[in-house]
Structures are given as structure tokens and as C-alpha cells.
Length: 307
Image (cartoon, rainbow, N blue to C red):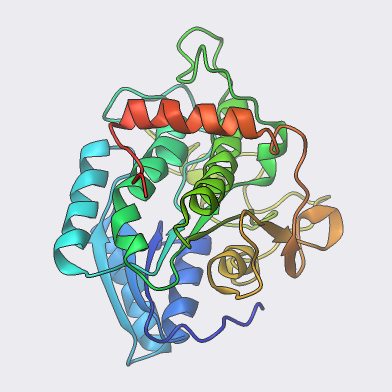
């Protein structure tokens, strides 16, 4: 497993910290000495994750706060609460997400659910928290993308999938490509404006978590089987303990580079130790990333600091 460097003295927010890679990342960051804020939608699951952290490290500094990335009002309220209680925030880990919903569903604000939860929510959260982050000595933002971003396309004429025939897989891929654009454009803005903030991205390869079934099971009484449920026989896969390595490297490793993208380096890029991941041409499209940032500011009613 990836060895997390000492995080003593750092305050870190991890979204989606109640399960999967987010839960594992929150636990290991807390064990490494960080004060960790578990940002979760379900308080009971958050409390369970907190108990696991305290079992692993009784002296851990960790707390649960409620955040629903599919509701921009919840995002703003969460950020306002942190601004009241913290003088600065050292690291934001944008980890939470939803995958392959059974049909086109909407957020509280009327956006396609995967686009809203995976991109617009984290974008708004990052924008709201930038003042707190820039007050930190060495701020960092790490954003979880996906290997599916390789298949993503950004259609500025139909970001919410209202005109096209809905494809849950294509919608997910687009949202994760947008996350990568978020991370890389934030890195460029930081360099251009002299913020000193390091922005990175990661993908977990094929990590077996409830992400593969939770989205597909929305609106159902029991989990829905999908081709990814429990792994695929002909594809290598990992448990969250291994799969969290990429986002932990992106969030905590001193060697992680500005705008860097990290993922498993083993077979097919699905398993193995974390390291630099390949960027295809669409991922390196700086013009699309800049346009997307401007559009997302307008949609979410946010704006990055000028300095």
C-alpha cells in the first residue's frame, strides 16, 4: 500500500469519506496525523467511518460534516460552516461521486445527476473553499477522475443531457473528464496568479467499491447487479486499500507535480502501485478546460479570487 507521508498539522477535507477510496483515504490521512473532516451525505454512514478511524488511531482528530454535492445550497452551507470554524484549510480531496445511474436523474438544482454530483458540486465546493485554502501555507487540491475520462466528451451545447439520447456511461465519462479539466485548469490559474496552490488529479484504476452498484441502484429496494459488480473475471481489480493509493499520492506526496495526474501503474492501468497516468489529447485540451471553468462559474454562481 502507498505509504502516506506525515500529515501532522494539516487540516484535510475528504468528500465521500463514508465508503470506498474516500473512506480509506480519510482513515490513512488521519493515521498520518492530519485533522480530517469527513464530508458525507449520510450521517449514519459517516459515523460508522469515523468509528473505524478511531479504532485504527484512538488519538485521531476527525469529525463528520454533512455535504450533498448534488445540492449547490448544501455545498455553500458546508463551505460557510468551514469558513466560520477554520482559519485555513490545507487540503481538499474531491473524491465523492456517483456512477452509471439507471436513467437520467436530476440534482436538486435540475442538472443531470452524474454531471451535477461529479463535476458541478466539486467545482462549486473548490471555488467556495479557495479563500480558506489560499490562507494555508502550502495548500493542495486533489480531484478524483476516472479511467473512463479517456472516453469522455464535453458537449457545451448539452451539458445536462437534455437534447441527446441519454447514455449513462457517456454521461459518467464526460463528468470525469470535466474533473480532470477542473484539476488542470486550477493548477494553471494558481501558477498564473501566484497562489502557491498545488492542484492534482488521480484515478483509482479498477477498484472494487460500492460505486459500481450504488448509482445503478438508485430508486431500487436492493442493489442492482451491473457488469462491474464484484469485479469482472477477465479484468484485474483492487480493494479500496490499494485503490486509494493514487488519490493519496495526489493529495499528500511532496513529489506530486502541479497539474499532475496519477493512477495505478500495473496491468492495463487498472491495478498496481500509483504513479503518473497518461493524458490523451482531450485531457490536455487547455482551451476546453478554460471554457468549462468559465461556464461552471456561471452555472454555480461562484468566482475564483483574482489574486
